[in-house]
Amino acid sequence: EHTQTEMSMNVKGKKISVLGMARSGVADANLLARRGAKVTVFDARTEDQLAEHKARLMPGIETRFGSIRPGADSDLIVLSPGIDIDSPDLDEAKDAGIEITGELELAFRFFKTPVIAITGTNGKSTTTQLVGDLLREAGKDVAVGGNIGTPFCDLVENPPKDYAVIEVSSFQMETARDFHPKIAAILNLTPDHLNRHKTLQHYAALKERMAANQQTGDVLVLNADDPVVAAMGAHSPAKKVFFSLSGETGDGASIDAGMIELFNVHTGREVMPVSELPQPALCQLENILAALAIADRTGVPTSAMRKTLSRFKGLEHRLEFVRTYHGIDFINDSKGTNTGALEKSLKGFDRPVVLIIGGQDKGGDFQALKTLFKQKVRHMILIGEAKQKIRHVLNGSFTYEDAGSMQEAVSLASARANEGDVVLLSPGCASFDMFRDYEDRGRQFKEIVNQLK
Image (cartoon, rainbow, N blue to C red; front, top):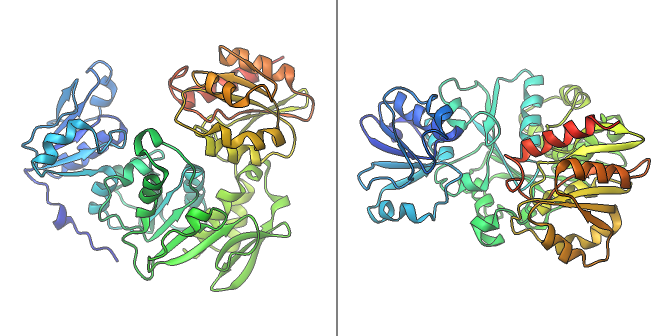
């Protein structure tokens, strides 16, 4: 199946620069050092800031702090996903003709097990985790990683027997060349990371690159409800499989008259009624259908699907149910860091929402959500740097107020919500203006909600 071999990546004695000392950078450096490369890791931060990461590097790996400019004498440069391929720090290396790759490509060149790769703007982590659970329930030996949890490079030493299920970001695709998943899934596409990718067309092209090396016999899973995604891979010889919330898809997964159904070579089977899914699953139907379409192509039986879905809890910070207080449901969707995620989350509710929104702006188009706000949102609490931009879009046509902290936001939201409403933290923005990261934001929200009395 695979074209890559260890021979194509003989790194023994080679001088390799790894840029970025976060989780994936450490994994890259250790993988290369174990194979005899002379590795230097560069990071723009200080040694004090990175002490924890440095401690995880194998002995013999060199470190350079305060810069990510590698020497022009490197044989190979490995970029962490957080570093832009267009960074001026790489100009000298590009002029010298040095190959620049990333963790995804590096791990793949050493990897022997078939790969299931999942990308999209929203829902990647939930879908990746669920595919892993479905395959394990069917008795398959799988490892889950990539952009979620364990770096792909860390899976190379002890590869699973059957599949590696990995979440892939658009940043990782910037440096992908030979990457070739056996099953690739593209979940959806809404504007995100445009501060880095500049145009939606470029961002879409990076996502579509997932299927670039797929062959006949491979599978490409696409969202039939997203017109841009549904048209992807038009020239790919891979088998196209679709998922849809709105009716039949041909081959793939869909919901019809309240029943989750699968079609494989047009033979249909029912999985289970939507009404039998646990509460956290009801906001995640699209991701569930994508995961089922993938699992079906690996031979997971219906009984294993039902068993896995009946205990579905979802991921922390992704439409996570926190508690009901005075008849109001509090939902933590702190991982909703772009307007596409916010839109998806709001569409899942059929009762009034008091929305906590805002943070560090990523160039999202809040204007496009005005109609949805009118349909779904009773009141808004604005937080963070994007407050002014959102206020400008709302233009007095919605009731809203500002909050200077998460404590104040929760307190205002619970005062404005009525019994039967939802208080939803789905900021549509990054978190770094007020919090360490989206996890810190979500945990603070949950702590404060759980202290309400």
